[in-house]
Image (cartoon, rainbow, N blue to C red; front, side, top):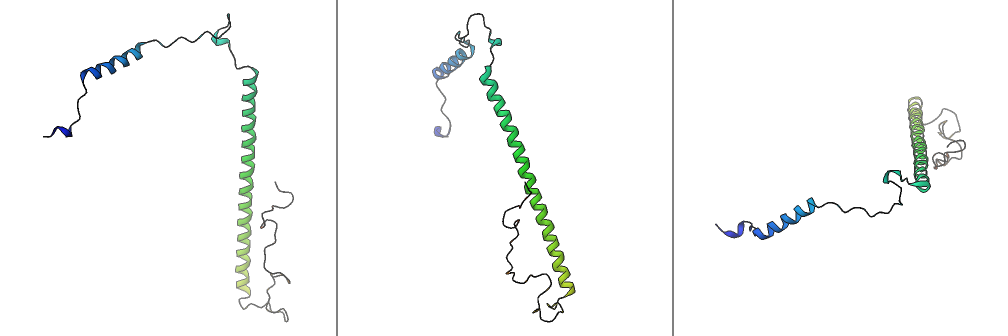
Length: 141
């Protein structure tokens, strides 16, 4: 067997030095805090003061405002998704109805050029509704 495969044992002197150092650190008392309080004050009587109160109140108010804003934004996203689903369902129903009633493509009226009743004259097919352009329109939040 080769000696290179095994770890070398540490010398007893290094082990005892580290052990004695750890023992000394574990048993030594922590340093006493420097006396920074005025005479007559106890450590339990000290409070954060007005600045601590104001900072804590600011954080609480800020958190409440952020939560209200987040709830409002989530509600808006849900409402927009619901409206979009209803609109898609209505469009799908209208297309299904149009396919059932007039698969030939004409409305039966002479001179309308095969246009169905749903298309508007002069419409180029662009979606100009305010909701489709990212504007929720008046009266919404």
